[in-house]
Image (cartoon, rainbow over the protein chains, first blue to last red):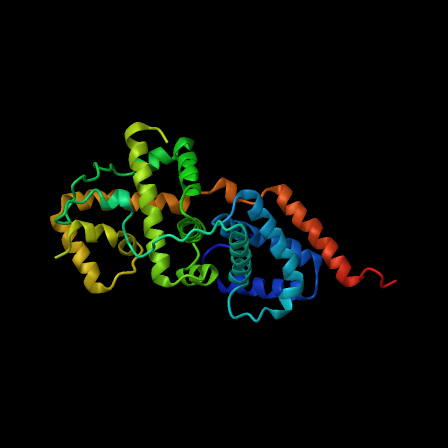
Length: 212
Length: 87
């Protein structure tokens, strides 16, 4: 079974219905298929908030919880959104227990590094250098840039990392991201924009120095 | 009239197609007159495109995790079918 992505077709919905029926019946094969289909996006959801080992634990615990909880699934969201919401709730609980939850100011649209580049009249003080067509495309072929992006995504504040992972990397819809992360649409937009700014600034530095 | 700082603040919503028609028009008009923001938005689009194609290696479940989940689920399902102590 293919991994779940952001845009599902009617055929996917049919497959999902069959899968849900199998899960409700306790069919082991249905569970194996579902694990292979949805664990990637579930792990991405957990990794937005937790370290790798804790994220894996949360995904495993969620699957075990699904055995009992699938009977309560009413189909008001997709199975994928429902699973990711359980993962996000469990990850959030872990964060609260470890007091690691960080609240970031998400009312300001610009990251400090970006905001500092503007003069007091609102125009660029330190404009970006010229970007060639497909310049990043060529850089992207080098694994060094991908590794560097991975590293910097890891360093993003939790809410930015969660939103960026689900929106850009896993390409879930804005509604799904809001539901899964229990964030307002405007907070999701600000967090996404700020995460992209940090990575834009990182790529700018990488273009100039070739170093991460 | 939009300033460059506002233009930059709205860049994600602009490339994601989430702006109202009037805001979108204001962004396009600003692009006509501002060379710095034309450069910026070119880099911004490339950045967003790359992020959408980025496979985050550490976010993919490993084979060992999948096996671990399969095993744990098989045990849980067996317990539901034949609860311990049910004879």
